[in-house]
Image (spheres, one colour):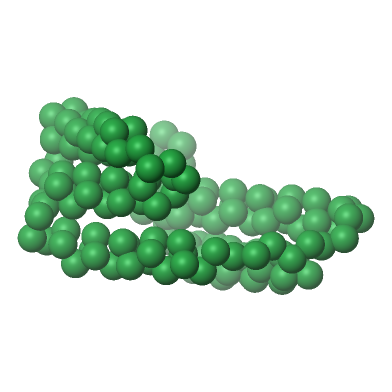
Length: 140
């Protein structure tokens, strides 16, 4: 029941998003205007939410209550808060490196330190190089 309510709320929010996105000019595929991307995203979100609603209505299995690991959720939320707070002081690269390492350590059940470090380092470096040199965008 909870999934159906959340899916219906997502559909309603998507409809509201699309309503406000239509106030922007769409343009055309050859000459997109400021509303092109918001309207496209709104249409896709509505289609996906209705597909999910239909899938949930056709499902006959009994809903099982899934337990949420609130401790892990709290630690992830705290990590996100610290990421936002330290982003200005440490900059993109180091704050993202620490944040990804933190998330990977919390998400993994193993006590291995090298895999999360290597993945976070490669990810942070790759995105930094992508934005800095390929897209020519300065990061903080």
